[in-house]
Length: 496
Ligand SMILES: *Cc1c(COP(=O)(O)O)cnc(C)c1O
Image (tube, rainbow, N blue to C red):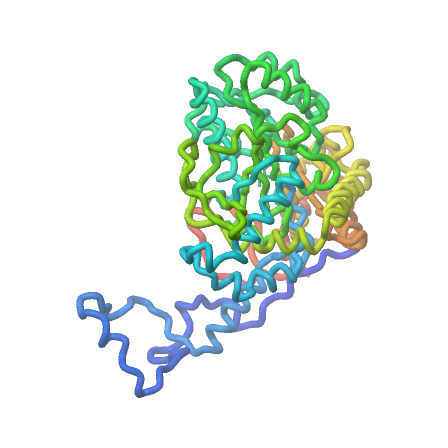
């Protein structure tokens, strides 16, 4: 790759304007037929606004072009490779969108009685069973709307179970490689967090957990594969240490895309887990969009699950509300139903073999990138990786180039950067998750860009340190950009 691909400069006189600067008084994108009664007739006077300060008055086409242009500035999985580690930015097949929009699903009313909702309930029940099968758990609840809410729900189940035994206990053990949501959920659930360190192989050793384990520990939260992309091979021994002292094992299953059809957390001593449907099971996400973080449990925790539970009877599907030990609802209705429909369609369209191949391809792609880049970037750990690989910036640092500079320079090459500076145990981390949906050609283009940046870091480090050079805005003061965003786009001087 000789030349970074350049972002086409927007056309003159289209780009600079904000909505508030365009238009003209009286111009409108929309007009009512004369005979339509004014809306104001049905709304009491006191609720009617006389005037909206600075309201932009624009024609339909101006408005349309404005938003179309903005949408084209977005970086999306449907336009480019998105190797954002830990986030699983893979392609979400369009068939899932088609199915989620079927009127029978999209218009179904969540308060309709079960007799009128049998199809939706069948789907929810079926998805619970499929997710239980994939994860090796006995029961699943779809209520949590995200991974983090799944964590909180799982910890509430653990607290409810231990309380029923007489003592909710006080602490949760969390490895130093954990996603930030793990300690946050523990704290929100009223527990103190005890951190254990991973070893030189990037995994947790049973001895480290044994040192931290006592009668006050309610649970260990472990992520497998962990956020270094490494399989926690000691998980069974670790689970035994926790169980021996009466604690439970919680698995952060956000990375289930590395395990499907290959290994089941339920066979590794895990008592509770959550899954990220919007990552592994293909719902568009990012920007805080809708997610689903179902929890799976072993049978002994079944009675504590959120209500209502869906049961299959001789008369069809019914809802059970009366579960005295339940932690109650954790959100309205049945969870994010549209996301659940997408996951159902995704699982059925791939089948068991397809899911296994998905995981195997995710592992293959990550290991391909790992082996192609390891001569250029230092690997944080030498273990083979699962679905993502983590490098650091040590080689580049000799020339004063940091992870942030590498990430910014990737923008000039037209790529979304990987996750940077996470996990925290790796100084200057570059965490790359290619996912299974990318072709070898795409991976090669990314690899070439990364190798070119490694070379630039040696030969022309200032080029990398001052990147990006081709984006609408250059290097920003990130704190200031978040607190005082300047939305007006200034045409950059194009370097020749
Ligand atoms: C994404 C992720 C989470 C959080 O999931 P959300 O749906 O964003 O709340 C938790 N743990 C791990 C390991 C993750 O990758």
